[in-house]
Image 1 (tube, rainbow, N blue to C red):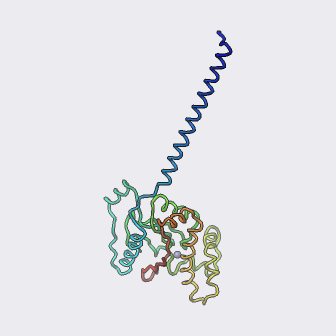
Image 2 (cartoon, rainbow, N blue to C red):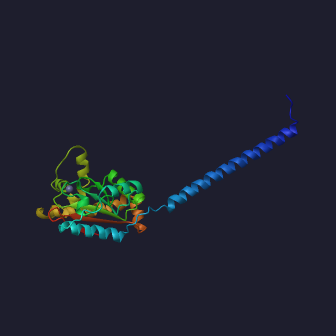
Image 3 (cartoon, rainbow, N blue to C red):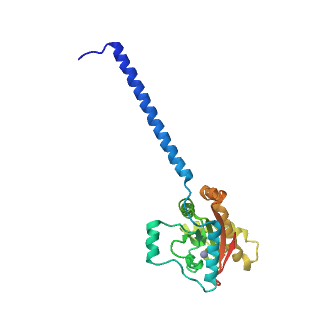
Length: 243
Ligand SMILES: [Zn+2]
């Protein structure tokens, strides 16, 4: 095998080194630019939701008025709409965190249809980690302009908390999230404790959402989202909004 003269061998090594350095630099530049492009895409990505804070709030209020006055229109249903939503995706006008109580059916309460509301439910409308995660999805990926935390009268979960009921297992953990409310109403007359606690629970959970979730907090600060609370009266059908 022919030996390279030492000077040409040295030159070949230099060339090779330059080639490797240039290749690595180009690769790094490519990676940096594509990750910047990715970041830019993320930063610029605001979900296209045609509903605004004002229009969504109006839709909820008008819908509840229709429902409570017995003039519900049961809008937006049927096969054609289902097919359209399946094809084009959803742009709900609000995310609602409500109690699981069967007397508080969210779409009916607001006279809304398929694709209108992104509903998350848990006894007492308690925002555990899964509920907050679901709300973050609605904000970050569906662009909902409203989050409504909806408590209701005669709520079993709040009643259990206020009366100091002890429940085993996961239910006990859920009820523990209502402890601050139960404590806050202790000094009130017994007859008014439950009503006060229900109202307070919705306000407290609403506040908690912006405290525990940077996604929700940033959307509120950017003016893209409003977080409100309300109490649904299961006797009259009326929602008392607290904006
Ligand atoms: Zn309830």
